[in-house]
Length: 421
Ligand code: LLP
Image (cartoon, rainbow, N blue to C red; front, side, top):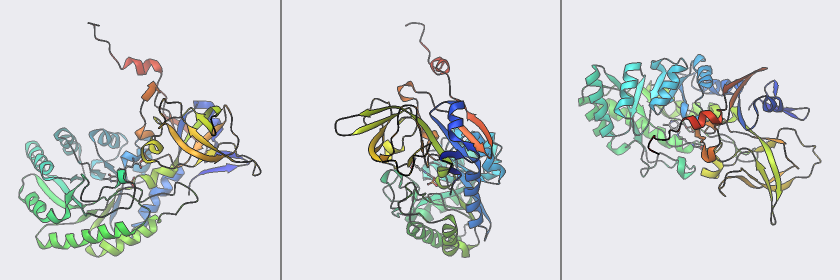
């Protein structure tokens, strides 16, 4: 459920008409609903209320400081994967003890940043990384709390580009080798083992792969405890999917996911951490864009928008489906005709949807892409020298631009022409 609804034919973000925001900030832009974001965080928090837990928002999904601050003030932890994301979480006021540092290639510099600034744990993904962390911690005279990310070799049954838990993927250490890795962790100075970490992929629409992975983690917990390790936390990653197309299958709810976690690992008495990103932010954001032209092609019609693949890469990159809806609702009797919805970038890949049935739309009309709050703005780029588009946050009847559109002067000023040219 989200807070983007039509009232008398006009699309609202909470109490604010989307067309009004467009008039104020110009298109294209992202708009987030604070109530939706908060609601989704709470659903996870409640789903794990049966035991000690921390819901760590995956910052990679949506990293604007305002969004992080909103979640952080509700008690959320953060899952970060770079020094940049760590700085964002801290700048949003999240204390180090609520920040989990994940990522397959943490540099020594990033390790230092986290250890000096405070961190709940670092999720280590390989032996070389673990040895580097040990050296960095010793040099700083501190102890680094670690979980080892294990690769459970489970098929997440999602898009190949976002599946991470198969043996062939670059993530984690093979679960079969976990005992050796934990034994080395215990021997290395400057490290303190606190738990186990696993994350098998994103946009999962079934619980079975989670169940398979968490069952393996439960067994591993007992084995490692038998080996003398103090496994007191389980970081179970993120990955619960969202409904992108209203008509398609409905992924499991956070409550079902929480019950599954309880069933598979609840008996171990561990503190549970999860790292959801998409389910918290995805349906809390829209991408709003205006039609530049409606163009008749050879046997097909095109709707050329002012948003493009550089603003929302998911359709081009994963063939992802986003519902596209008119900001002013069409009358029920209006005919819907299939159109290709495209951006103005000079690539055929700059296509949001093919043959999408839409009511008649013309120059200046506004459309909204639903489910664009996660992996939308964060994956945007400036291809074709298109400025990063603004982000807007709505809460009730409050509206704030939380990232302004840069001017072209600002963009050009980042380049330097060497004096010898
Ligand atoms: N934890 C780790 C270690 C991750 O790698 C990820 C996502 C998450 C948590 C959050 O997963 P979520 O709950 O959001 O599914 N750009 C792609 C998604 C990439 C996901 C990468 N890792 C997309 O637009 O679909």
